[in-house]
Length: 436
Image (cartoon, rainbow, N blue to C red; front, top):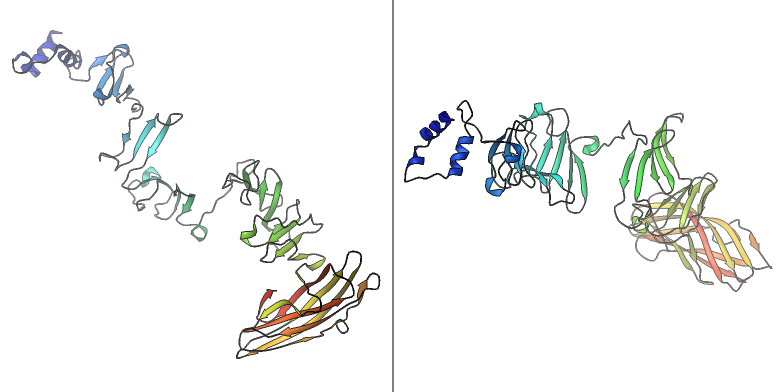
């Protein structure tokens, strides 16, 4: 003990001077920093005797003689500095030597509910890079990010073999440097029991994107026979696609869902409209017009082609049915299959026929012809109740620029509640088609 006091007097002679006076507590701390062998070290305390650690003592060190551990005051509590470095709650462990928010940091944050660890990006780069330790000296050359970003690199020293994850304030973004078409090539987990992906819906309401308000998820999952299916936990497998090697030769395969046994092709803007197709016996593709209509479509199935494209007719008046656009110095030809229907409250009449049309455009002047033009020559016969009649005539109209319009004038003995034509158009040659 005498050696320690002598050393204190030697190191701090001013303690005996009238100019500088150390408190007895300060002298005690100096004494606690000397070991039994008269070596200088951290002040030594038993665990129960450690001084209060608060913001005024941040950075202080002490040796815990009970735990045989060097401890550091993190501003609110003592933490072990040996056998793993610790800092107190809400104290940012800075990475690098620059002060402030420039460099990244780690923190145990009690502002969160519940308390959690936070990885804090610095303003210099605003991102973290996850790579092999051996690549620490390689420059991955990521530019400063607008939003906090995580870059995950491959095992190669490459500036382009990375996956990134961030949120831009509107959407969550997964991106990559190189891959299939410089995009994301996500592979299912081979060890997973489902061996697929889970995709969460975008909104809180039942939309086409989510397709299930009750479950809230869509799965892109492996299906029997290979390939992937769109799976909804509320409805089961909702369609699949695959490169199918069961076929001879191998081929691309599309599986329609059993819930409807069909595929609907329509405008993106019509996704919330119910086209109301019933469950089909055979796989069917429905292609809809630009209108939100449950009847304006063409359907393709193994039994053939079906069309419900139609137009209401005005009796005894040439009603425009379809407009064919023909560019200058161009041509077109085609066949129009049709069924004309008339009906009143109790009786019906129907005729099915076929007509051929052709058109040319010479420097803006169209020449259009159609034949046959009437029910007497188009090969049709009438199916009618109560002796009702139905006649009609096809005409062409070249009014307008670079166009030819097919029109139909129909007459029936019935006092119609319905007078309508259903048609299918087959074109040969360059042209545009606009239903009227």
